[in-house]
Image 1 (cartoon, rainbow, N blue to C red):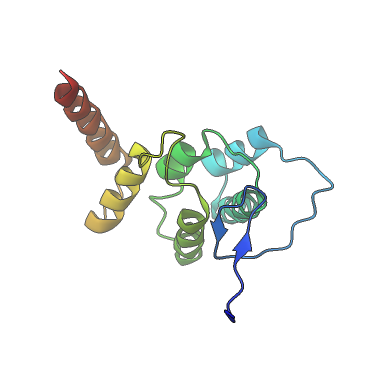
Image 2: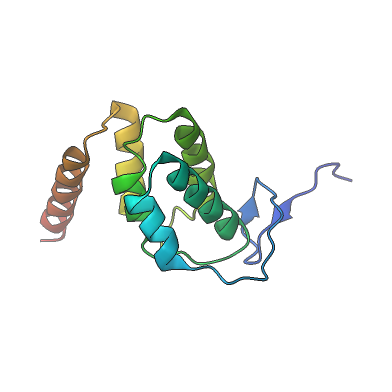
Length: 137
């Protein structure tokens, strides 16, 4: 018999983190997005923690990934960088078709090269779309 216990989210996808979440209040995605975009570092930390907990408990957070890439990834705050590692672990890195999300390529490329400039990330995204379109022609 195996001594290891596997924890799963509500969708039965593998989960390496287990966090308690009080689901008495529904998630407010516009407020969460607003804090990530325009908040100071403490508000971004709180919003990122909330996003991680929501993801781990099976909530869908559409369009939050690009907001985090654009507004949170360039931060130099050590706590935010640690939370981002947990966030990257918690999100689904594949689309409905089973292929890797193009946004994840941006994340890994940005982390590998240490790109902190949002304009550079946008240029990389544009170039990847161009290459994708060229490949399909």
